[in-house]
Amino acid sequence: MAIPQHRPLAIFCDFDGTFSVQDVGSTLAQQLLPEKRARLWSRFVDGEFTAWSYAMALLDGLELSEKRLDEFLETIDLDPGAETMVEWCEAEEVPFRILSDGFDWNLERLQTMNNVQFEYNANHLDYEGDRWRLAPGRPNEACGCGTGSCKRGLISSYRAENPDAFCIHIGNGRVSDLCGALEADLAFAKDTLAPALEELGEEFVPFDTLHDVLDFLRAREVPDSAR
Picture 1 (cartoon, rainbow, N blue to C red):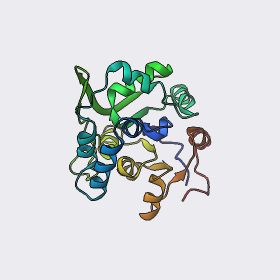
Picture 2: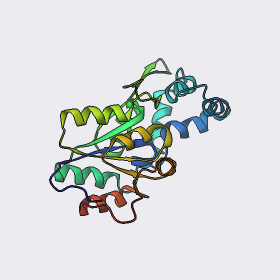
Picture 3: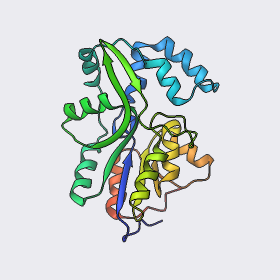
Picture 4: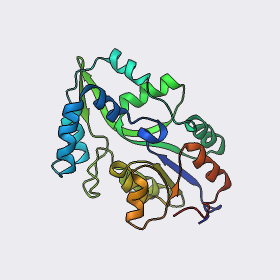
């Protein structure tokens, strides 16, 4: 499957576990709220929560000062190819946008900490004293993904304004990335997203780091290993 030479690219990339090595929210909850996370996750698996209502139950009202949050965010690593990906897209004039079901506050701080800049869509995090107050970024009841920022809806909106664009989605998670991967013209997938796409019989390109994705994009073709 070739990436059409005549169509302009647009790249949409998940953040947690894709642009970054760790999942910010999950790692934070594992460290600060392990018992609550395990209890709520079990209920999420049983279908009591959507992805967004689970996040609200787990993290809305979390008492964590800005200083302590910054100290935690300093431990988050970016993917080895993250900065190169942004630089390549800028040089090639390819639109690049992070689509995250995480929070804008964290993305803003991580950009500053890592001296990298990107456009993004995410959920909202504000502070009320030292407590988190959360709001969804762009939910989409028509999708059924149940996230606060539906990636299918975001990519679909871009496609409506740019009908010639060849939309690429890069992600790693079954819950928040599947609808974006299905909406895109081409999906790069790893971790739980890859078997989710396999179960549906959908083609994707497997990858380990964003360096792998860049190698394929530079060649403007998808290798025979895509499945």
